[in-house]
Image (tube, rainbow, N blue to C red):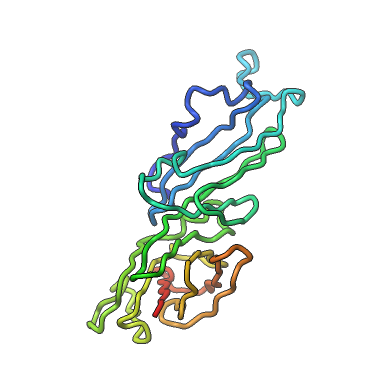
Length: 233
């Protein structure tokens, strides 16, 4: 879920998103798991009618808009690297996402997931679940580091989950919202050795994009949501 109400992107301020024929409406927000999300909307050819007191459209003014969305649009912190995901195309790209909005009322949602360093040589980004409108909104409490053989050293203590197979290894762990299920998309510079959900080993599926992979989160993951642990040697 988003941490606050959406706001118009600074890069879209003082542009005429309804009549100039080139600008898109961009609104941004921050997810609780650390990712940023930008909604891109083609509103060209529409305007507020004072007589009708409603939005109306002029089909002859509708235009095909193409362009890119960058982390700056989402007010992402400077100095970080991000993986971008398009809800419309379900594609991953590094740092920049393209949008293609053919007519008025078309839209896309771009998620920027921070690339986290796990250990000495592994980097990973938790994108989210594409079957949700805001795919990164289902991800919470992302942590990374080494798990040590200390009782109670778990990403979420109340879950009661701790994988002995991952003790001493570089681990990225995060929690999903209760009830979240389906395909979970991630990106990594190195293929992980193991992926576990609530302590149970699951398989991963590689994507066409270099570094992208998916895991299937089952429906029944408990009332508190799934805890996902990804380990590298």
